Length: 68
Image 1: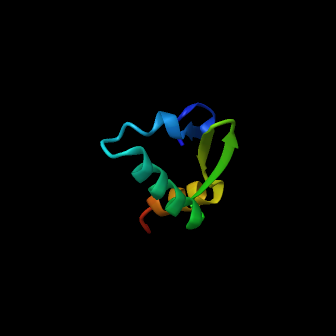
Image 2: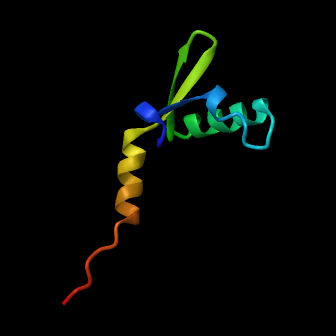
């Protein structure tokens, strides 16, 4: 989500210490769970965090003001 345009290519995130098939497997699991969307452009797939997920995470991470 922090990449320019809010999306990342598989080629940009494949250097995380595991093989490319492992990265693709986990991205597919996140997509199947509804956390990511993807778009194929040529030979690369670009992933984006589902906007509703960002909204929900923001609500979870927001600290409510203490009651007076």
